[in-house]
Length: 410
View 1: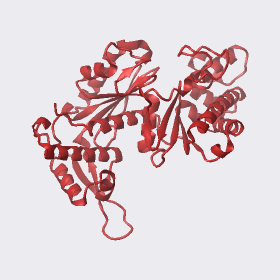
View 2 (view 1 turned 90 degrees about the horizontal axis):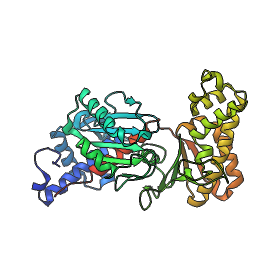
View 3 (view 1 turned 45 degrees about the horizontal axis):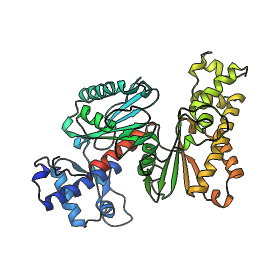
């Protein structure tokens, strides 16, 4: 690894020079995550003196990494200067691999996508055979966008299932002999971070979304599966092996449907996007009359959670009933979380959260029934204000946090 000026290998730096490199990297990380900050704002977060920060910012400006981008608002007196990274200061690659497709992004120094995301029909369910395909498509995008590879900080990858963040091991999908992290790093020739999708989404909420100014927040990823992310005392909670949050696999019904995890009656089998689509298909095949049939041109395999929401919005009673039942199960299970964690905020994200009041109302009703009111009355429940790609922003933020706090000296 080189210093931010790109002039010297850190193995040749003395202790004072190494300290300065780390200070610069902290500033770079803050500017990437916040897009623009003033000197006092930087001071508040890293605790250096104003003259020291000005000195470091001037050096970063001379190195072509930082620029002045205007002035911040002020209640009086001289307006402070806003600093930000230059667009071409660095690049970060973000990849989402899920059950049905893979989406690839490249972000510039301002944490903005350099182009539209590349979406490929590469499913994680196909196993390790997709790894080379994902790497090829990513490298192809880097070449097409004429990105200087030397400026790429690394690659952040979010995937579903059990993931040990520290070891870079996937226990559910893409199970490789070596840690999956090492496999991708060797193939990319770049640093890599791999994280579970719900935790990546939670980190995005913590850095950019509803959890940013809160200490104790639960984020429910209500997608094809169900995931849980926890912000406890202002920090992402991962657990002993980074495996905390398997909320979707709590057994909720006796003798229920067999879950992908091998147990019966998991919450995921009755309240996930996969469950919604399955229940819609089964009901129609069993004789239920529904607008869903015409929405998918009688091809029931095309029913997705968004199709059921669309039908509910059009007044389809069967779709409304499905979403109401899902909301009731979610509300009952959320009651357990409230009584265990005593959160101040619960954020709903993912495809199922797009059902809005069709699930929010039954969730609240179930909480009123099953939860201690002294706990539940203090909790706010809201749908995320981040977009569907929040997870990839979360995992690239993790990458920046990791790389900008690390100097290799060996």
